[in-house]
Length: 574
Image 1 (cartoon, rainbow, N blue to C red):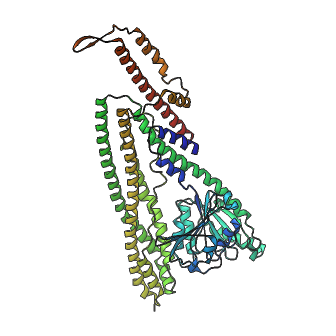
Image 2 (cartoon, helix red, strand yellow):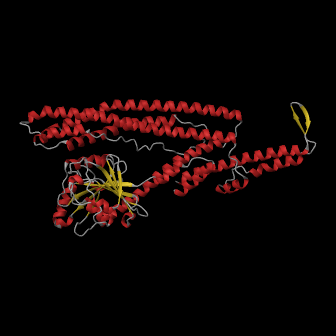
Image 3 (cartoon, rainbow, N blue to C red):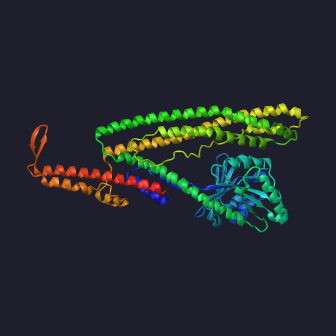
């Protein structure tokens, strides 16, 4: 793949086209995330430490307030300060492992910690980023933390202690969500040495039966580990399997990125591979400007319509959410009466309902509008044989799920912390709370949808502008004839392709050379002013200049044709 990028960069260099996008592609991180989730103290951090053979890298046996998201991945060469602490206020601290281990971090202040290690075991699965998510009973919003990785996760590993093979509400909601998004699941049973084999087998059988209510257990990979003996082989093999899958995903993403950028170069060459008079170029440049302005206007109008239609659908989504909350109102009332926090319950309902509603209503609408834009709004003045370029992946019509605001979360805590005399006293308070939740989510969802539509719009406008700039430059280059490759360069470039259908400049040379020989010192040239006799040197100079100009023009067109063919072949290869 990177050899293809280098070849494309060379072609761009020849025509003085920008290689900034190819450089960006080379620097992209195509690694896949593998979040590890589970209850607090189930052994997630210890498992990662054992996997990479670095005892104490991730802090174990810590209190919930100091448990933060940790990302661990491989890097070549090794860094002096391989730990990057990212704070919620935007501050970033780079430090060594020893310095990190002396720090006391707060989940309220730190967004996450990144570890980039030159590690032998991590090198085996270098296409993966392991993510240690704080336990679901830490008091943090771990569910939302974990689901933030959903779009980039190749699989979720869920850890359960062999001593506690049960499913709580939060975990059930996560399993449902992973099933909705069709994300692979690996379940890790830790601390198997803590109970007898017979008890483990009996509990595991019951556990699989419980899981089958929410997911297809036949599609789940189960791994067993022992804390005493550090038995992690099954987990290591599972990660190696994910690594191979991640490699395929990486190559696919890289291929899409290369083909997209190659398409821009192809657009330039399709336009440049033409001969135009000055008058024709002037007309074409005017047409290009007109088409660009019309296309930009039509794109903006289409996305405005998409945003308006999407926002109208929020009413339907909120109605679905209201029904979902109403169905669980009795359960939540009982929980409040027992002074239990219903935040996880509400959050689970919100995520489950909104995911289904977005997939049912918003995603098809986005796909409809984007398909219309792709099919109707393009600048296609010279594309004779299109390279398939995906401006937006059809699987990427996701909308980031809106979190509840801090004010709503605090209101839930306040309602749940009170002691009520009877359940009847709770009912109006709970109803008022749920109305506040609906209003909050409606507002947050409208922001999320507008933001996502804005991202799509920016991506399309950028693509449209790039196409316009490519065609504009092609016209300028034809007009100024700034690109006239010498003969020896053409000979080298012609090695790229051997095709009998291509025009060979030698085919036309014999005719031009023959005409030069036939011209004598007495040749006459007829002009508007009448008959003029030219000196032999002037006559030969004129024809020689014409021959040189014609040859350079043929030179330019042949090389452009070869580059067009080469790009198409490379796009087919990747």
